Image 1 (cartoon, one colour):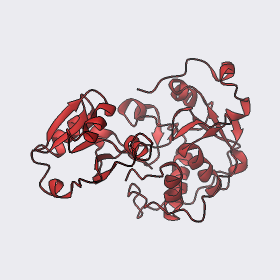
Image 2 (cartoon, helix red, strand yellow):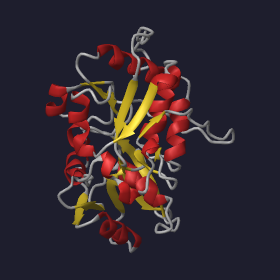
Image 3 (spheres, one colour):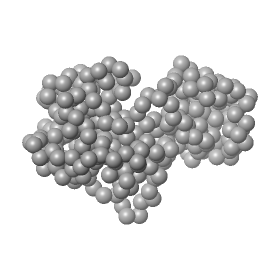
Image 4 (cartoon, rainbow, N blue to C red):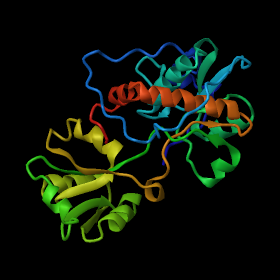
Length: 293
């Protein structure tokens, strides 16, 4: 569970962060290197959808609210400034809608974001608010622009292709006990031999010592582990990605107040253009050097 910040934005002196980092005009997103390899954009966005070109000329301000405790989506960089996938996406949206001069982004404790949006302290929340019934009753959401994949990780020297073709029948697979991924493994691969372990680290150690043939878990977290020193280039993704609204949720979207349909529609329009232009793939590469997909 995400740790909530227990202090207000104005009281955050221990962070030694200038106030401009919390309520700042959104600068232009820096383009990726021309030599970057484009990550194929996962098919979360229906390219057949068409949204009318929006008119936000009547809005003097579009303030995005976010938090600083959800890396790599939204966090503070080494200079104490807001950074992350969500932050850069918000900037791209503002540029696409030609409202960059009126865009702002502000960080608050995650637990306060919903109430702050409802109170009019901002026009949108881009911080990973759950797409659940309670939040849908309070807010309107864009179409999801990112979903969490489940993935298998296996040793480089022991590919899993043949076993996957056989439905992992009898194959020992490490998974965190009591997790959504344990339930998903049982539903998607009922013939696999689930080996429930207390932590992801314990499951990965079981993989390295070949007590299990694979580990099944969160693709985002595993993508960062694969590129870490701890992994020592031992392993790789196998199969997948595997997606499930039931087990993993509907993904990430931007929340607005229900009456702000013009904003919701405008954000969908902008995100669709960002996806179609390939910039979403570039953004994924920037924050996920080892693709989770």
